[in-house]
Image 1 (cartoon, rainbow, N blue to C red):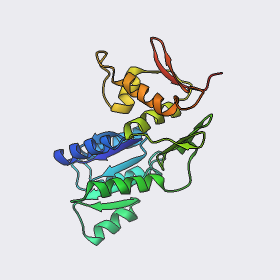
Image 2: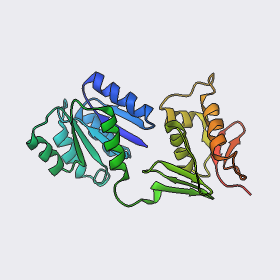
Image 3: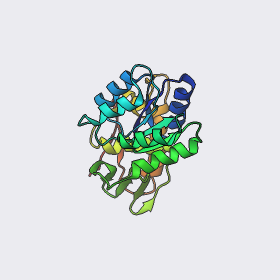
Image 4: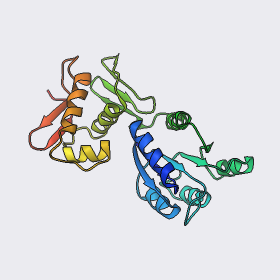
Length: 226
């Protein structure tokens, strides 16, 4: 799941990008309001973490303009700000923010609030992914196969989510590395192959009917084969 963080303070931005990345999210970081608005309207994000005091365009105006666009009308937004006055929190919520967390904050609380926002509302079609007897509930972060619960790490969940969203498509190692690790693929490393092998141990090996297949010279594909 992809999250946009709009934060101009370098240490805070890097901290959020690293922490949310370790929690299994792909994170884009914008350090000013104009860049944040451009990314928010040009790409699809499951959630936006937004500071109030930003150079170029503050968070209030960014959110106001985002909510005027068709693509940004429904995207959950969590304000993260040192402005702790009641009037500021009310203003943020009235502008259309879904939550408001005051700095300094505990990262565990931020993560809990993000996951709560992602679970809100009825499941959309892309939030419950199914392939044969494999079921993935994205907001609840649960995976079952044949009714049996499968425990996955954050990275394994993210990798399986990519495969399930792109069923039937052959994904190259370069694309997998970019989507799951947010990095450029280095042909001298086997990080993708190792990760896929571990995921197969969780998903495919306990039951008959392999769903994740290697495509020689190309990458991997997730699909049900006869």
